[in-house]
Length: 331
Image (tube, rainbow, N blue to C red; front, side, top):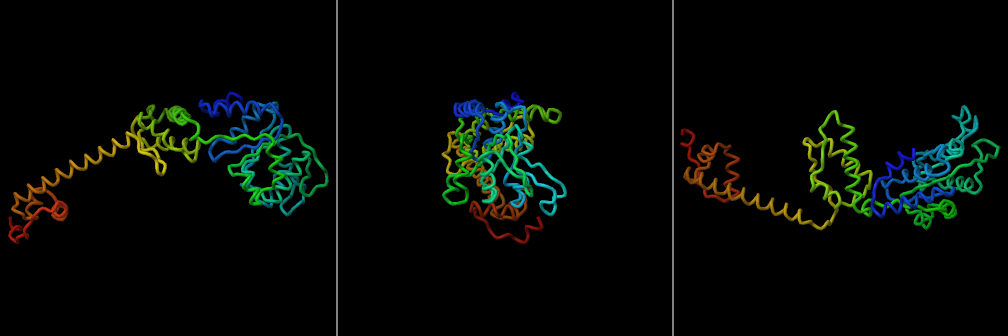
């Protein structure tokens, strides 16, 4: 499992190497951990790393998305319930905390917990004891708690949306997963890793694909607000939609991004191309109209074009014309 873990903690930048070192150190101490970071930065991977590098590695790792739990059932899901505790409680359920016995309980999106659920979790964190919903027996469990949030919990505390005492209980050992834009060359490194995986996964359907050099360079110029998840999905999408063996799709650009030398060259090329095409069209329309003595209908026939379309070119380049004669139709 540790080998699999290492293969998922991808990146060799100094910024990410520092995070890996933190994870290894935190894993040695059996304390509560609070992981912060933007969406898509790999907070659950960080939590799994702490668990599987710790002395609890052989025991369960139970992930819980707090935002997906119904407010009325959060306590039941976490602490369990006795039979008959509520309408649909036809039998007793142990709860997720009991399932994580000896291991790690990972509470993602901790900021979405209701005030009531926050109070219940605070009581549990104080001495690791709890009661099932509808029960009277006090139970004790040996569980390590890791919480995560992409929200600023300090700001939520100031806004009275998150309990200050709960934040202090959770923030025994803080860990922040850095955004991709702060990880230097990890963007292109991760992109190549994702490409290699796709080449293996689709080896029966496609010839191995590779990145165009300009595409690889452009990957590093975008800030990737969705972080690793956005990058991975982007590479997968462009891989599947690319008909050739070289991926050279347009990479998203940030608002207000400074044009690169390549961007400047491409803009100059497009401008020059448009100018050459315009000069050719103007010259062709003028010479054809001259041959047709200014008659648009006759000129359109000479050019092999629809009269309406050719007339638009005449107007576009302001070429002189005369009124069409009725006898033209007899030619």
